[in-house]
Amino acid sequence: MSLRLALALCLTALPALAHDVVILGEVHDNPAHHAEQAARVSALQPRALVFEMLMPEQAALVTPDLIADADAMEKALGWAESGWPDFAMYHPIFAAAPEAAIYGAQIPREAVRAVLEDGPAETFGEGAAAYGLTDPLPPEKQAAREALQLAAHCDALPKGMLPGMVAVQRLRDAALARATVAAMAETGGPVAVITGNGHARRDWGVPAYLAHVAPDLDVFVLGQTEDGAPLQGGFDEVLSAPAAERPDPCAAFR
Image 1: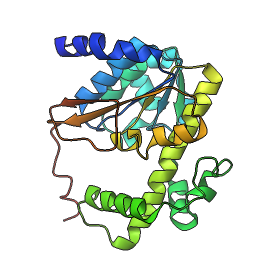
Image 2: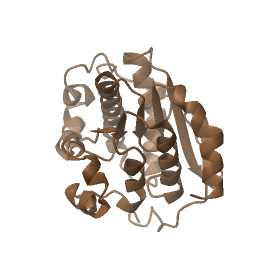
Image 3: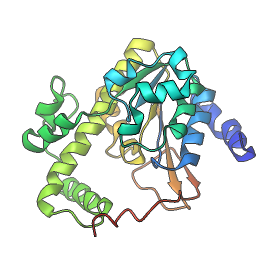
Image 4: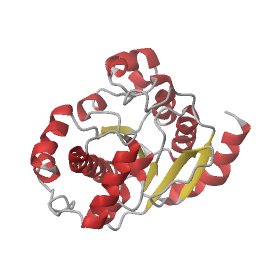
C-alpha cells in the first residue's frame, strides 16, 4: 500500500464506519480508484458488498474460498467475457472483506432491450412505483440526462435513442438501490456499494433512490475523478487520481 493510500485510509475512510451504506464511485478502468475502494472496504469491513459488475447469479458463486484464489474466481465469474476492465483491479476489493456477503445488481442484456420498448417500470417489476419508476421525469431533468448521455457517447447517438438510454440508466440505478436495500435487510449492514460515478451521484443516482425507499439509512458517497476534473452530481467526498491510460473513447464512433 502506498503512503498516499495509507494516509487516505487513516484520514478519510475511518469516519465512514458510522454509516449504514458507503457508496464508492469509480472510473471503471482507473486502477487508483479501485485501490482506494479496496482500502475503504478494508477499513469498513462491511457485512455486504454490492457490485454493479455482477449478475445476482454470479454473486451467488462467490465464497471466501473462491476469493482466496484470484485466477479461479476470475474464471468462475466469466470475467474475461464480461466486458469489464481487468479483474486484477477488482479482486483486491473482494479480498479486503472476504467474509462479506456478495450481491450483484447488473441488469441482463435482455432486460436492457426490454426497457427500451417497455420502459423502466415494467422491466423492474414489483416495487417499481416505490422506486419512482412509474413516474416520468420532469422535462428539464429528462433534457439534462439526455444531454449527458449524448456527451458520454461523443455526441454520436441519434437523438431518438436518448430517451431509451435515460430509461436504462434509471433502471440500473434502481436495481443497485434494490440490491443495497436487500443487502441491508439481510445482513444488517454496513453495506459497501461498488459502482461507477454516474450511479453514485446523489442528485439522481443510487442515493436518490435510497432516500426514496429507505430514508432512514445513513448513506455516505465517495466520488472519484481524474486529474482534478470537476465531478457533478453531489458527493460527500471527491478524490482525484491521475487519469488512466486509455485509447480515445470516441474513436469507435468516428
